[in-house]
Length: 425
Image (cartoon, rainbow, N blue to C red; front, side, top):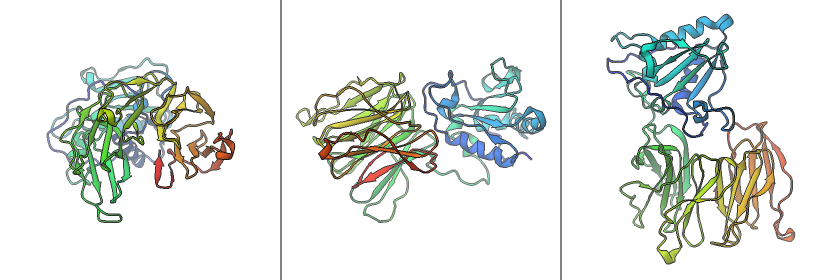
């Protein structure tokens, strides 16, 4: 039977506009993931055929932004289930609103059995779909950004339904600022919020907003402790630029987020160098690593003002940390599935070329610096098992082990590694 529908008032969303794929971030967006769970719970004989899709596969697709879902339902034997669910979405509500639930959920278009319904051309009804896949073994749902982020009235105005959590978009970031922990996350509205402790193990303060970075935040904020022992936060905006806010020496947050430019296709990775300067790395839309940084104390830690191409052919988010000699070490998963890295010699030193470290990775790496100055890398392989390589100590000149070791496990997400209070993920 179809899902239970809350009782809505007469106010309703506009039809979702066409918003095609503009970048690649295949992590499932919250509105899409919860719609999937809703449908599968209502129709237990059907299947999940996936939300996210690898960046390098095929052409443009909202799957590559985590805002499309393929519902596994067959034309032969299950067509009545698909028709029932689609009929519920496209029906007229008691207030006379056509296509009411599709609009409330922010659905952009639906493809089923060689036909397509487009919210941005709803007056045309169903039209012929001529793509290579006839969609007879699944229904495809693509969502606009508002629906994908849970900003539409299905989530915000459900009378009597369970309340929507304030922070629910994406994975939160956690950092220990020396006097307790801070959690920072992106809200469905595109704003950023945080909650914190004022003492280790102390009570948590309520979620408090940090404002909306320009057109809105997108993805996972990166928060770290800066040179004053105060927090600095970075996040990718929906405009593809980097946005930044920080605490002053008094602990007060800046009044507004500051745009830092750039063309980002991944969440940022940020590191604090021994000289107190911050450096930011990300993947650009061409799959190359892009980089900006603060200049040293002799320049008042002013930002460089532009972005530098560090080349590469990478997927996912690059990972950076400070190595044993104070120079930065950068790791990224290549389009070949292997791990690649480059490094500085000493603080502020020149960068090496990219160097391969092998491996078969299906997720971003996690890297940690051990007490002896050696780096260790952990990742997920295509079979979902943890794989690991490392440097072999000062007796061997900190040379890399040369192979990867299978650590077993069955992982659905990236691993994290922590040692000596340092975390790189």
